[in-house]
Image (tube, rainbow, N blue to C red; front, side, top):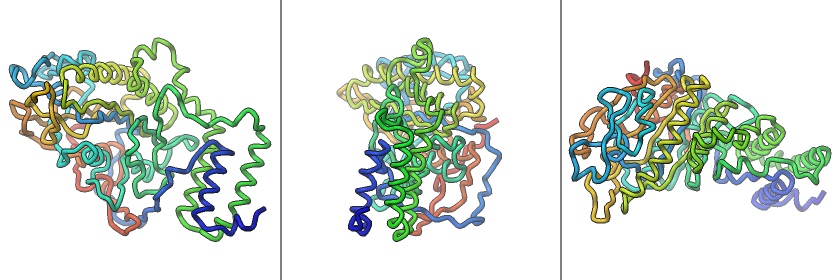
Length: 435
């Protein structure tokens, strides 16, 4: 063994391990970069809001770019100057109307709680996205955890050989584990049709050779681990242990949507979002407790009445299929389905037949997981300009998710800089939605 290698500085040593892992295992520890272990004080700050969970899993559907409330879940009948080409249709719930862009979901409104009083303090896409995902405003000095990371931190994994959370997205800026340890961060998948890449042992490497290489890598790393017995180093090793367990797990089939029938693929839709919803259902079935699926393209400054119907067609089919499929499989009651976005779009139509950023009012959806369907919470004024009743901010939505999962919302965890943080900051759960 090369003594100079074992004695090398931490940076070059880390580079070597990362490259060796790429070669031997086909995995990378890039997700660990910048991570430091957060600190919690056991037994202190027990949440007064902790309850028996109503949901075990979350499927979180994120509409990236700012989904128009006027053209989806909060249309304004008889406001032609604001509605443009969008019309209003009845749902299967008396008194609840959606836009004509969502005919399939209109027939499943009895499963949903429609939150029409969402608002945000952030009017730019990146900042609004971050605030919605973390309950905290974007800062240059710290990265905050997302809800999937908090869930894994407090309740661990349901299936020890699969990740606690998975994010199906092309957004490289997802906050992930934030300041929490990398082990509770999500696995990122770009394309649901491709499944999980680089998780099979190369055919040219036998099982015996593979185990020999793992053992060799461990021995080469032993001196380094002894010399640098830090949380980051231990977490780094945990990532590889998790990767190996996953590679050898029979539950890897959860990531293979090709195992589904042609009829099921057609039900969800052939686009990436629909197939992502199908993958989300498979992952939840196999014990992944938090799955996020994103649908981009909602930043409609131009051609709103062309682009929104196109996006709504994907959303309408994918979400309607997901709700029906979960219900048929007996999974909807234990799975909280969340649909949200960073902010709405202006009720006023601009000169480019578009709608601009509008954090003052937008809509979100909750279904399953103990939520009482067929209800509307909050409202906007006649023109959709202002929240008129029961205003909710992103921390309140995240607190409601945490409440459904039974997470300790008042429990304080200290970041590496010793600053105190909670699951949803100062957000308050909307307990009246349950029942």
